[in-house]
Length: 455
Image (cartoon, rainbow, N blue to C red; front, side):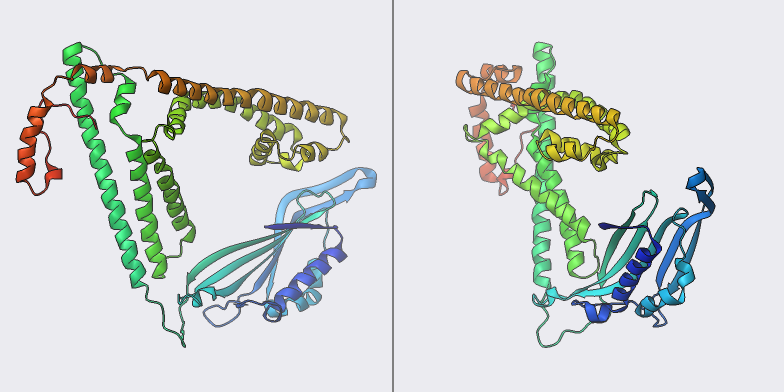
């Protein structure tokens, strides 16, 4: 969306709209791309619609400090052929007799059609696009300036009538076969990871029963997390997203679907999770494992700290929106205030944020200075320092553990006590079953077996 402003005079408004209408009517000559006007079912061009919204009745006498306004809104519209739109301004001059104290906004809406031909080089079928254009002259503030907004919504679809000659159409079935192979691999990965989680849960239940029967104690949370591998959950979610995204991609390739945004979100998120899961393999090396262990140790403390700091951040957000919203464009909305404060925490746009608030209102100016100085000092010098200190403390703890050894949990103590457990004898029996089975990887230990396996 693009925004500009014009002075609120009838001459400027009419000249601006005349210029816009002239460009629209000469689209075929001015446009360098394959864009034209759409047609309805009868073959007629879809009309260009211009609507103005204003108060139903009103009179204003600033010299006498008197006004009489009927706040009920009234909308008047006119439509005409987009190719002759510039002439309609002269013929409908009464439509442009404007009382700016009554005028709220004027909207010009029309549609365009276009074809994306860049895919022809790669021997793929081009997509057709519909553009829904809205030009808004916004006078809601009645501040002496009329803002002009250009908003374009795009919708893609498969072209109904097409023909490509001079080159062979690219066969898409090879890509579809590859996509099917990707879906099969992701599905297999998700099933195997789910199977590992189920087996881990069963093993945890067996160990909990054994621990309760022998020691009359419950397994602590740290030991329970040793059985449940979070990387498997990440891989399962990544595989599911990749499967859905690949299916949408296949539908797009066959021109049965045009949800590019949804497909890109699924595939992009899946790719992110895949690369994050690669860190798991670096964890087998002690020097690279420091990052994973530090994140795991610091995460609970950081999460609790962020909850407390978030309350202060929300307080500053609401305060800035309420007080500085009418005076500063960066504080006009809650989302904009949150983004502005986040930029200030990272040291961006500090001088610009201070300079944009003029000292016309002394009280608000003083409040803004106290507000900004206190926020920057609190979050940069205290909150961020404490945030870094939490991570540094976790890093130092992990380094000490790697040097002196990690503290033993109940699970580790239990495993050390089972050094003389007759695992070799049972494993020799398992070797016989393995040799007799073609699918040795499917051989499992029976439920009533006393062997405890830790993977």
